[in-house]
Image (cartoon, rainbow, N blue to C red; front, side, top):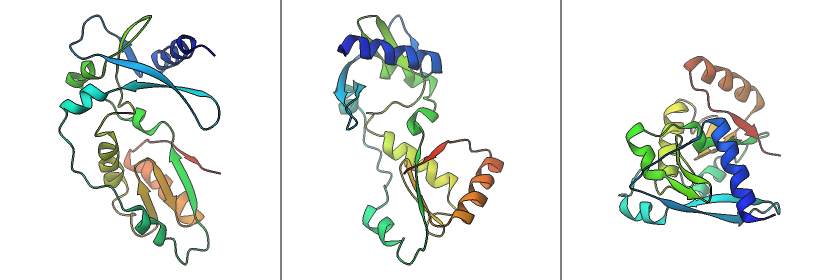
Length: 176
C-alpha cells in the first residue's frame, strides 16, 4: 500500500476518534513516517526527534523487568494484558498540544492525546498506572508502562471492578 494512503487513512481514524485536530499555525512541526509492523502491516509514526531534543528528561523510574518476571515465581495462574491504545487515553495539556504537531500532504494536525514517540511518554504513563494501582502493585499485579500482569483470575475480576469504582477508565485487553 502506498505510504500517503496509509497516512491519510490513519489521520482520518485519529480525527474521527478525536485524538488529533487540524491546526492552521504552529511553531513546532514534525514529519510522519510509515514503518512496518511485525504483523506485516504498516504503521504511521510521528518523528518527534527535534521536540524530544528540546525536552528535559522526566526521571520517573520504570520498573525493572527482571524483578517483574521474578515476582511471578510460585504463581499457579496469571494473565497478561496490554492497555488498549494506552497513551491515547491520556489527554495532552491544552498549552502543549501545538508542540506535537505533524504535517502530512493533506494538512497540519496536533495530538489532543499523548502520542507514541514522545521522550517522556513512558514515564508519564508509568506515573499514572502506579497511582491507579498503588494498592495492588507488588501484591496481586505488576505493571510495566502499558502492560499488566495479574497473578490470579479472581483478583483480576475484583480489582478491575474496583478500578471502575475509583473512576479510572483505562481499557486493558488480554494478551493471548
